[in-house]
Length: 220
Image (cartoon, rainbow, N blue to C red):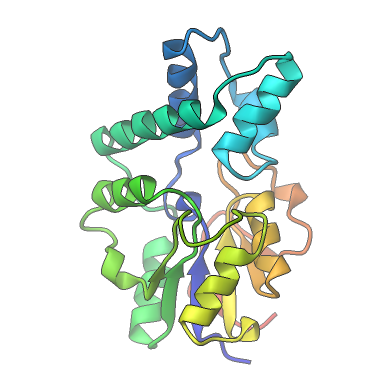
C-alpha cells in the first residue's frame, strides 16, 4: 500500500497553539466576569474532549453553573485569532519536510479540521510564507459537517471530496479525541502530541512522534 494523501487533522498538527488557546479561554472568562482560570494542568485534562464549546459546557457543569458556552467560545476564538496574528508562529518540527515531500511526490495534502473558518484564516495568516492554503487540496471547517470531532464526519467528507479510500491515506493528529475521528473513518493515524497531550494515551496510533519525517509515511 502506498499512501496517496496526507491528512493534517487539526491546527495543532501544524503549529503549537496549546498555551495560546488556554490564554484565550482565560481572557474570555475574565471578560465575562467568571472567576475561572484554567491552569496548564486543568487545560490538559479538558483536552480529552474535542471542541472548545464542549470543554466550556463540561467545566460549567462541574462548577454547577449555567453559562452561554457558544458566546464564550465565540469570544475565545476572537481573542485566539488576535493573539495568533501578533505572535511569530513557526511550523511544528518536520511539518515543512512532510509538505515538501508531498509536493515532490505528487501526494495530496488535506487540512481535515472541523474548527471555525476564522481560526483557519488566522492560522494561514500567522504562518504566511511557511505554508499556504493552496498547498491543501481540501480544507475543512465546522460548517461542512453536522457533528465535529471525534465524530468521523469531517474525515468522511474529505475522503468523498477527494475521491479517496481510507486505506489510501494517513492522518496526523495532536489529541486523542481528534485521533478518534480519523480511526473511526478507518484511516491510519500518526500521533503528533501537542504540548499538553500525554503521548502514552495514543493507543491505536501507527506511530507516536514529536517530529514528523517522510519515512513515517511508509506502510506500518
